[in-house]
Image 1 (cartoon, one colour):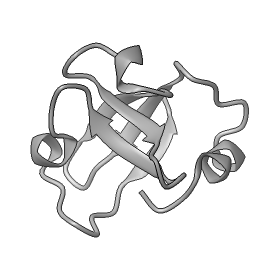
Image 2 (cartoon, one colour; image 1 turned 135 degrees about the vertical axis):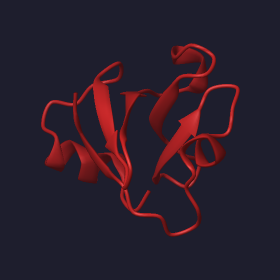
Image 3 (cartoon, rainbow, N blue to C red; image 1 turned 90 degrees about the vertical axis):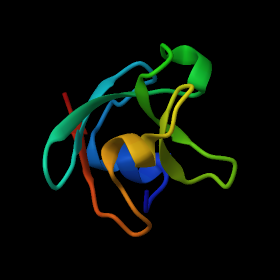
Image 4 (cartoon, one colour; image 1 turned 60 degrees about the vertical axis):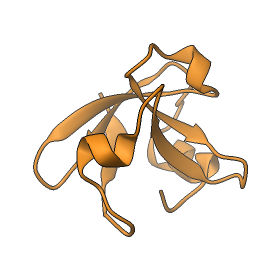
Length: 82
């Protein structure tokens, strides 16, 4: 994702770990959780988290979010509060 947790916090005020998000995809929407670690969500759940470079990332606990959602490099998605 192109941005940092601070960017997301400005776009979605008062966002805290555990908050439900909607990932807006070209063909459908998916549910995700804003989390600090993969362990904070169930296996197979989508999450938005801060990666080791400090950027936002979209992942799937015990899975592959890009494959599951059909996303390639440079794919554009949106995020909003659920």
